[in-house]
Length: 392
Length: 145
Image (cartoon, rainbow over all chains, first blue to last red; front, top):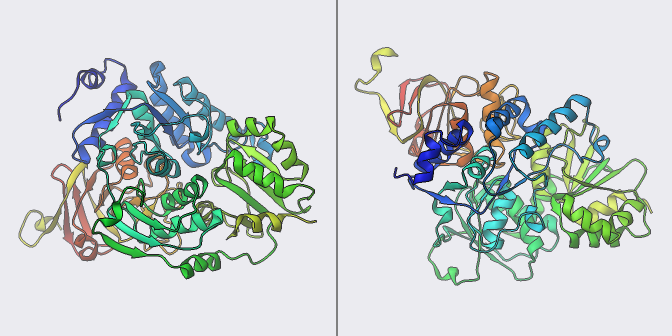
């Protein structure tokens, strides 16, 4: 592999042991994809922040990387952690978990990673522009920035995004090439409206097309929000890093075709059907945008959440601050719902037993919660979820 | 087992050595993409994903031969955690490249061969003794179950 001057110095340990480890990882990845070269990045977003997911070995890894004052070279943001830093009690956090979680955040901060703690940093904290080369982890955000924003990123892993941030470059794979095109055509001209439908559609596409880049032939009328949910579903069931929409004449290409029909969406609702009154209703996977919070606040006006139901709505710290300025936080909490930030159901240590019935509008949250907790998980459309939580 | 090594009749599958090393052990073969986060218990290495063809099986000390990883980008940390607890596979071989598996193996020093032909997933059976030789980028079937 031909190395640039900076890469060679990093490899020789000129910038310290951590940077050497980081460049080695990036070069291993570059080499395995046969691209043999790296590309400079403008920003990074690291996943693997929750103590629940990375555990003590993860802390050891981060300690190793942050030794000798190693710093990131580009703007870098953090994925959600195990609890809302201002309301940890909502997530059954005990003292050891609290301490370990704060240690992870401090280690990342010491390297210069911003504690944004969100899976949707593209709303406010870290906004790639069209054509930017970046190194992002968090599957839903990867698919979103590639497909909706038009930036270029690999489907970075937590550690590789951190290594890219430290070295300022990542492996130049086909994801970073301008001519990245579709590999399979997916026809899904369905009447999908609710964000839950969009998440399920993405999840179904990923099940049928586990690694190729799909060209989606959709019925018009989607928004950036719909595509956010589609990206999250797709990122859960597949290893793809993007989808393409039929906007630049791709559809004339001859490609293998896959079809998704309305009954398949209904099958997913059946598989995750609500059997009893939910004890926890969760909204905000991925984190809600300001527009979504406005609509939810409107829906909650004059209503009250039932006594034995918890309604959790999650968003990012930045969007929360903006929502607070506009009175939306107060409006949502007045109804007895919890608007939380920094975390989500899946990465928090929230205790759910066999008797708990969880209802969510996110296929991604349902998929992970099903294997990571022992409770009953169900999926419902957004307003159904909220209605189930409300008494009067 | 020893006598078959390099001799006639040893079936081998060529791929690309990604993380150096060599390991021999019992194969766990999966035709389905595996989600490491959520799909595998990070403390025991047992596959939890419902409906997965390896559901209920333990990865510790095995040779994991699979299509590819999928899902969460945190998967690499799960491999690293398993390795630190002695519950990780001894080696991994995949048909397709995926960054989660590559990173996980690289930071955990688990030998990894990627890009083996898909027919290997049909020809190899769980319990076969196989060798992953990431120096040469080859997976060898040494003996049948």
